[in-house]
Image 1 (cartoon, rainbow, N blue to C red):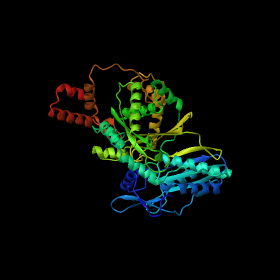
Image 2: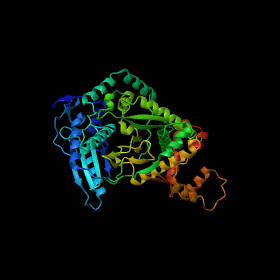
Image 3: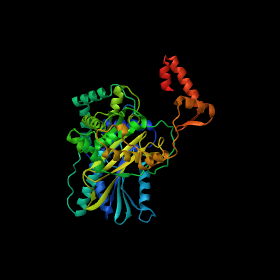
Image 4: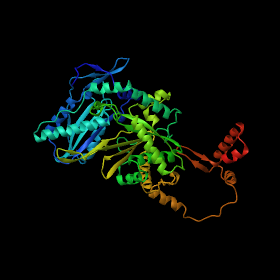
Length: 517
């Protein structure tokens, strides 16, 4: 620790926004918890694991603070020591050890925390068998972001490996919390901050409406079970699409997400949220300081049915590159600058989160598999793409706000997104996006089956005449069905008439009324 017990420090800009958001939520949400677990296929010494974890925690200033609010500004106060210890769980005798471990982790992630008194982190060694272990780490988002989690995981692995080999532990690479806070404050007082603000203000000066993916009322969903099972996506699928457009593989992924939102809503001005580290282009202090500085930047993409796929990917690449160059300017600051209400969650109903790591994980020479613990969004949908840089597969998982999306709906959306990514990998770059298939193979088969019946001669009557005849013949029959309501032919006819009268009152001519009808 570089500070004394009781020292008060200001919050970083990211911490302040997380503090305000959680105070407004008034309940524990897993969106404010972040972590992962490393699945180790080999023996793990519990004593050495605990020694490694305790040593690393002692190196990280950000884990030795509590948060208080004196009515003016929240502050983080240094705590010289915590009464805590890593948890050890032996679940090898459980009927389903892995399921029991996942349930325990889910409960721990939702465990209430007193920000002024509790350690805002937890670690656990969960044994499924003598040669199968889960190394779990979890943090409140106030003290750690995703980049910081990766730094801590790497340091624990290297420390344990050194201890297991009986050699010296390499010096800590971490900078102090003072360095992190100073870097954040220096940025906000710099010309780069002003330049970043100007970019974002110009890009969103017309205050586009957020792309609303669903308008349904809240609903309940199954508790802690995953909403959609993760699926594998072959990286060569994305690389094929990228090669056709001379872009990085992530750019077709972003373009496909924007296309999906366009097809889902009809919006031709799509805004996507892209989580970023908030550290690129910063000084070295941020790159070696575990803590909370990450951000979510908006990507704004024009999507029309006649847009060529090549042009949409090129637009996504240009937009992403520009956003990353200005990624330290917080989206919450942009909302305030524009004078628009809402928080990050409501501004980005679709988030694309791409998390790849550099090398295959291992633990003291034993093979390991990294699993991210993904939070559910508070609104909308989040598309998570995780895996190893240079690997053959990526894992795709779609998470949805529990109050808006059912488990079955999320599974369908995930299958369609994967089908769309397969389609764009094979399509002509000059193809217009309105002609790119969106349905899964099963849905296409069902659709084709609907056209396999008898063929009737086309009526000479207009569509409007056919509708009027149906109103007279079956006024109480259901005409249209929506997500939460339905209309009979008589009700639909009455609504159409009211709309026509309203348009006439506004001076709309007969030719426009026919088009509306």
